[in-house]
Amino acid sequence: MENIQKEPWFTKICPNGRIPALVDHDRNDFAVFEGAAILAYMTRHYDPEHKFSFTDSDDVSRAEQWIAWQLAKERIPYPTQRYVGESERLYGILDNQLKDRDYLVGPGKGKYSIADIASFSWVNVAYFAGVDLSQFPNLEKWWKRIDDRPAVKKGTAIPSESKITNGPFQRRLREEPDFKENEDKLKELGNKAKEQYGYKYASP
Image (cartoon, rainbow, N blue to C red; front, side, top):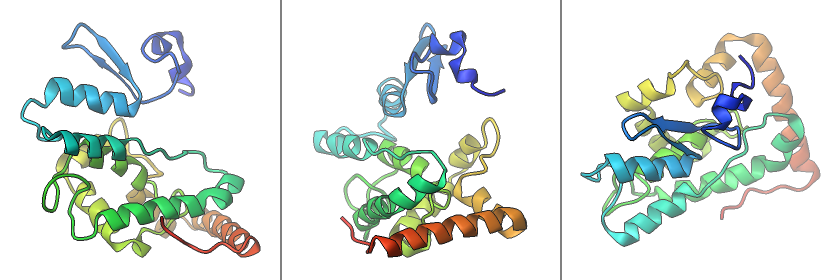
């Protein structure tokens, strides 16, 4: 069913008519929308041991900063050509942050937290966005580390496996010739745009 998020019952949950949104049946059907707000709500009410959040105020602030990142989800040629460079720049910043670290925030090599959860969702569509993760080795290892978590695998399969996340997207490239042909054409357009405007990768 298309545009179900625009139906009246859903806009009562999220006036903006967008996903994600959550209804907490354990707390009087309290509704929360927007990803950052949902993460904050979940840790506030359901993470008393701070497994995915922090007690140190500086680490709390660091996590909030990484959560603030955004990524457009549209997939049409012009914005792909125009903004793939910006996506690469942002991935480069994450790659640098993850140098000698397993996770984004926390002492030592860090710990898996809401900062990683928030950033994973858009790194997990890197190939869909036209970016090859292999050029960012620290980020690629981080993505794989999180993608291999059983709870993450379970969560990303609900309600069904997405076709635009990295794993399924790469599988489609291998198994669907027509899909690969279309993606190659789009990639070629992007490369021509980079050449036309003298694009050179730089981060930050």
